[in-house]
Image (cartoon, rainbow over all chains, first blue to last red; front, side):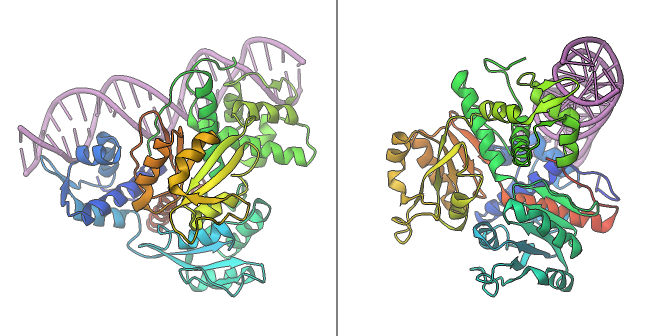
Length: 223
Length: 223
DNA sequence: ATGTGTGAAGTGCTTCACAGCG
DNA sequence: CGCTGTGAAGCACTTCACACAT
């Protein structure tokens, strides 16, 4: 049932695929060459039915009675997720968070290439991240983005500057935006926006703690 | 319909409440004193029905024909979310990400107090974050956690060290864990675990870009 | 035997639409 | 009138359970 032509795949599914991929890489490193959905689920706390459903969305990757080939499934997931060609990424904001993201393992790893960071502070422009990505002036975003076919802009500036950062990314024709700033951004409809709100997660834990304080026990979250 | 005694509230709801709270703070700063669910939704890209449902889970905060009092609703949300008493937080891992989180606005803001960071690298232990939180040796986690009644441990170490960091937090009796490491952690059932996976978000955008490449148009995400 | 792939059932979340209150 | 609060409908995601392939 290989997916073609604009069928809608849930974001939850693709996010889990990314997790499965990481698990497969770990298994691969450990020399496991075949694994069943059940074992994968037990080992990494997923549901086996969920794994099979998610994979079945994109094709038939398993062998009945046996399971999945770790190596082959890994390659398939990489292609499905679009990580077989490198995605150009820029980070707007070279503060603490921007620099941390630039050096974060998952960001300049297979599939992604951090082209540059952008800032306006004179003390930062001209420098580079530890991993070697240059810090350029924000005014050069358009030029760099079109020259290096950048596909994702990561916004890591304070809330007050986030909208103008998003506008700059939109003006540069970057099609997707990953926003870490605590702000609700307005972007043109052609742009895909995803918010990662770090405070939200903490607050939701605070709620859980407060709720637990007045009544019953804890609960474990998956994904 | 004020919620009492272990009724289950969805995490999605509490996460949105946290977003509403931030929006209300912005409105408050701007001097708005009353707002309808419709206006709130238009301004910050939510659904008005969703806002009303979310709020109705915890009580009747609005005035029919008028809307919500910004100030009163703000106070109510703060109490509901458990931010009226300060939650003690420790960050395990004083690398790029840990330091960024320690200084991140949303983390040492109203409701949260960053007690300390923990690491094992001699060059880091003894230092402090820009915001003043001390960096202590990981071996002192238990002592500090019980003395300062720490409720949330943030794990910001490399994947390979994440499980032992989680074990240390569990051993210290910390009830909730926010994991930024790209690893699937095993924690005791008494502990609430939440994963924030930065790579997952990027990968899911990469998928969207790859899918768009072969067929139709983009899509916007809310939350 | 074993484990996938999958319709069907189950559960949860969101949107609709309107009664009822101010 | 305008807007909340809310049952009911609609939609989406997850789990179940089993036919079927190896």
